[in-house]
Image 1 (tube, one colour):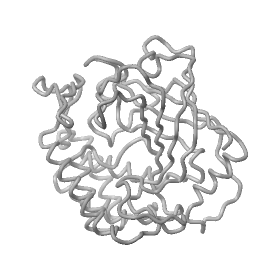
Image 2 (tube, rainbow, N blue to C red):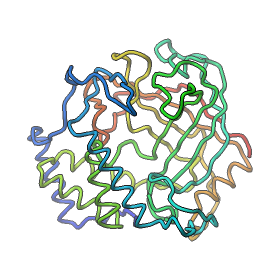
Image 3 (cartoon, one colour):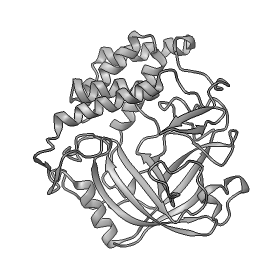
Image 4 (cartoon, one colour):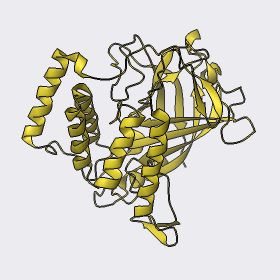
Length: 358
């Protein structure tokens, strides 16, 4: 993916999206996004043969299961194009060689660090759910920092979304969801976050179409974004096209020099407790202090990894683990292009993630 710049769309396109944005706000019916609440017929979703109860606000779009299958096919085809299972592939600049394929999303690791997460001891009763019910306790964890481009040899100087994955160990309580990977109850909990607060597609169907364009039809993110938004506009999904534009703009504005120094968001909403009417929230991670900022070499294709290594070998790091409430139904859970406004729904801290010297 090439760098997203402010000038990545022609002037006429920028003007066009301004016009359709105004049109959308004047004519909101032009946006075909589903509205809440969910229909009462769709109360379960089946995953690996297991029925999982849906939250009362959740909607299963028609054709979602088929879109997931089709998306898997797109990714498989992409893998065939860039990987050669019978020959070693080199991750340019990292010195790593590997056989076959790697993960489809965020395949480039900027590093994995040992961590500890300590649950705040003064949490309100409504926040004492699941992992966060263990107030005052500390759990071991591993964090993975990554870059989003599915092509793992992309240099870090190319603008991209950055990822944060956290696996927490020692979770012995009953999980809300069954362990789909085996018969034994899981004793871990995962959190996945990105460096922007909204996504470039609304749902699985949109993600399938965008991945078709970005993985199989072009290698240029600017071109893929323009084609996708053009399709949405021609389908009169004008409000959605504008939100997608804003999501790509946020990625373009993300200037990361150290993975330990930027904020991350869950983007998707999560059920905060048990029951179909449980509160819905989003999560975020905010650095307790700035990341390593000494001069670095932009020509180093892995300067994010280099800077994080410099940081963690010389001083510890930490993040505040934050939660944001869904204050009203205008904070949608089905449209990932829409961020919840923190002036209406302010974040508050649930825990601290600490990274010791290593």
